[in-house]
Amino acid sequence: MRTICLRGQALLLLLISCISLLWTAPTVAQPSLLAVKAALLFKLPRFTYLTHLEGSSVLNLCILGTNPFGDALHALAQTPIDARTVVLHTPATAETAQVCDIIFIADTAENKRNLNENIQTFSTYHALTVSDIAGFAQAGGMVELAAHAQDNSKVHILINPTAAARQGVKLNAQLLRLATLLP
Image 1 (tube, rainbow, N blue to C red):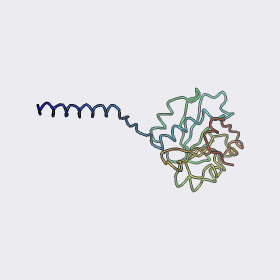
Image 2 (image 1 turned 90 degrees about the horizontal axis):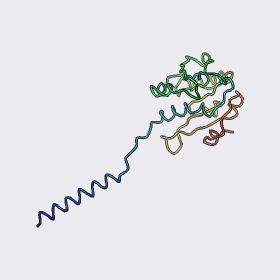
Image 3 (image 1 turned 45 degrees about the vertical axis):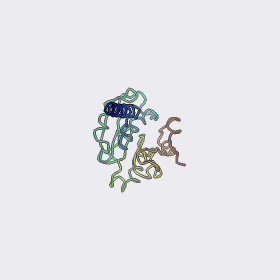
Image 4 (image 1 turned 120 degrees about the vertical axis):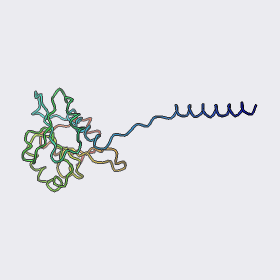
C-alpha cells in the first residue's frame, strides 16, 4: 500500500512538473543592438522622401568607416526598399560619397574626430545622414540612432529636422512622432 502511495506522489510530482513546463513562456532571444540599428537603417527610406530618388530604381546606401553591422547589412540589402535595388557602398572619405542617398557614419575614432568636417561635406549632398555617434544630431546630422538612456538594448531615434529641411530631405510624420526632435 505504501508503494502505491509513493508511486502516486511521484506521478503527481511528475504531472505538476510537466504542466509547469507547458505554462512557462519560452524565452525569446533579444536581437542585438547592432541588429536593431541595421533594421532601422533599412526602414528609414520608407519614412523619408528624397526628391532626387523619384523615378529611380536604385537606392545607394553608404557606410562611412568600418561596417559595424557585418553580414546583417548584406542580408538586408538583398531585399528591395520601395521597389528600389539596394546597392551598398563603403566610400573611403566623405568627399567620395557623392553617389550616396543614405549615408551611415559609423561610430569610429576617425569619424568622431572628423564629425564636423564630414557633416559640412554632406551638407552639400542631397542625402539622408544617419549615425550612432553620440551627439551626431546635435552637431548637425539628420538622424541619430542612440542607445536608450534607461535600457542600452533599445535604440532611441533623435532627429534634427532643421538639418533635414536644409538639405531638402522630408521626413514622414510617423517617423517624427516616434523620434525625439531637436530644436
